[in-house]
Every structure is written in structure tokens, then in C-alpha cells.
Length: 183
Image (cartoon, rainbow, N blue to C red):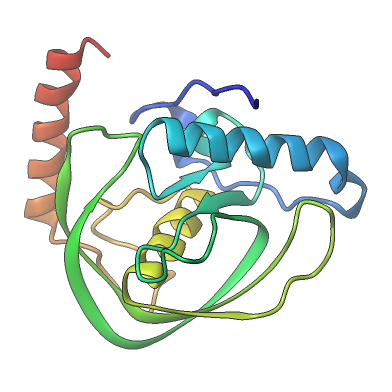
């Protein structure tokens, strides 16, 4: 059984840091074990995604489940590249690094994802719709030091995930939740 890793919560500086690419020499058994630990942690916390920086590791890696295709098992993703398409969609989102906080977030409705497996094998390209696309985008943002409440992101053709006012309200809600949970 893989160990459960401790989560990092917002405003830990690691969550605002752009992660480094996983180098060819890093692929293999150790990275595969870290992938199993990420999966175990995500499942233990009842999440649908978890990125390496959320456990303090600044590498371009995340794990995800497929809410739209539950028959697909969880996936370990290394060095992902995402192509966003489709209409922007707004849905409530949460984050394991801000437990108890859920807000409306705008995301692309379709994602084409390329990635490598922890073994180093290049995986087939995945086309992800709706919630599957949302999970991939959320976790990919973590790899770029972006949280779902970041209202301005010039790197996305889909622009703001939420309004500046909503972002500020999310931070006020988080402070209340953090104090309540003693984090």
C-alpha cells in the first residue's frame, strides 16, 4: 500500500510556483512509486485530481479521475501538454488545497491532452470533454502556479476563471474555513 502524502494548503508558496519539467533520467520506478502515492493521497482525500505541487513536489505531474467516464481508471500524467477548445463552460469547482471552498469557474469545454507515463512511455493523445476536461485543466493550472480563484491569467485564451470580486470573496471564505479547520 502506498503512503498518503501531506497536502499543502493555500498560501503555501509552493502552490504559486511553476513546476519543472520531468527530465528523461527521472522516469522509472521511483517516479512510478510517487505516482502511486499521489493516487493514494487523492483517493484518501476523496478528490478527483491532485497535482505534485499540492504535496510539495515541484514537478510537472498530476493524477486524475474521469468524472464523465468513470469506467476509465485513474491516470498518472507526466509533462502534460493541453490544447483547449470548445465553448467556455462555467461550473462549481473545489480544490484539495482549499478544502470546503467551492466556486463557479470558467473552463474550456474540451481538452486534447498529450503526456508521458511515469515509466517514460509516451501515452496516446486523450480527448477529454466537459468534467474530464475541467479536471485536467485544474490540475494543469497547479503545475503553472495557478489556483482556480486566480481571476487574471494572461496565459489562457479563455481568460479569467472568475471575476476579481468573486476571487476576493473566495479568499475571505477560505480564511473563515481555514480558521474553522485550524489549518
